[in-house]
Length: 194
Ligand code: HEM
Image 1 (tube, rainbow, N blue to C red):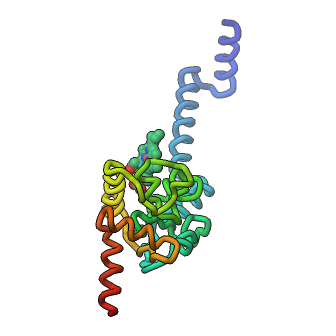
Image 2 (cartoon, rainbow, N blue to C red):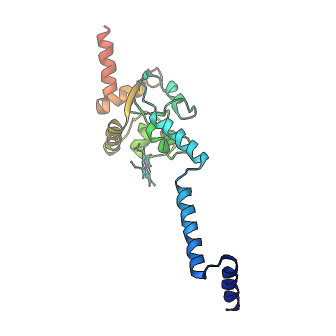
Image 3 (spheres, rainbow, N blue to C red):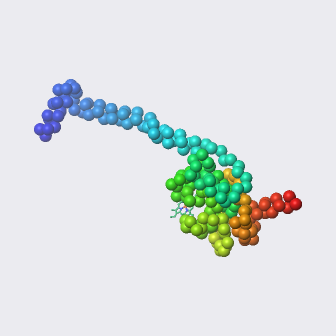
């Protein structure tokens, strides 16, 4: 109590204000300080926001046919390249979901790859990071189909994996199981060129 009366006397002596008026003014100053601070973003935050906007603003660029090896370059390791990911040979630009697919993101392992098998099996196992959908059950193919619809709806398709010697077998297998559209297109292309 003695401490409180010393405090109030000191406040009154130095400011000429009653303790109630003094504490009200202090509270108002704190609130004003907080409001003004919240109106300005810290410089480093501003840079981070600007950087992420730059990524979002980039328009998807059509890539055409690429090999699986060429697709690897779009795995997020080069910040100047878009993030690309393929499902059933169709390549989508997933850069707008950088928080999922960018470096450090939970699904970063899928970028630069055809992730068909991993998605069908809901697997993060590196051995399933392939477009080879051989031996999948009907229900797993259905899961994959749902993912494909989701990607078709959400992302821009920018190309397709060109079947090279190594994955040609898988592509043919894929077309047997689900009438793979890319294979049909490729077959049409071959027929056109005849
Ligand atoms: C513990 C299990 C899991 C949880 C809690 C989880 C949670 C989530 C959540 C909250 C989202 C965001 C959905 C949205 O806002 O659209 C998401 C997206 C996604 N998940 Fe999972 N997930 C899990 C497992 C998996 C597995 C096993 C896979 C595949 C192997 C997977 C693949 C994906 C993909 C590809 C997306 C992004 C879809 C897009 O681009 O919009 N997730 N997940």
